[in-house]
Amino acid sequence: MASAHEFLLLGDHGAAKRLVEAALVSEGFVLTPTPNGGLLAKRGSMPLTLLIGALAGKKNFHVTFIVEYLVSADGQLVVRLNRNMGSGAIKGGALGAVRVDNAFRDTVNAIHAAMPAGVLAGTAAR
Image (cartoon, rainbow, N blue to C red):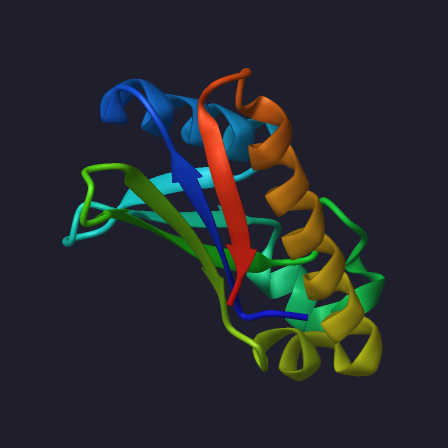
């Protein structure tokens, strides 16, 4: 699975960012602004994940994604969802890596589904 996924969004940048944020919150993430204007999206319990690993379950297994907001050469908003490729294996072995893969895929799908017609111009796995 890719380490990042990009969404090319049309229209008002502020409105598009709010759609992305709403999709992340609907997936159970707590959002914290980053110094560069993006977001740190965290879900689950780090202590519980370290204690019982992948057995922590979907909502309790700790995952962290970084959201970057960029602007393309033609002025469109690019939203890049990033993940750490090794963190799942460290937290829960092979099953932990699968949990992070599933969480990343589900989050990409949630952002995609949150975009109304005419907003999503394209997506790309990186």
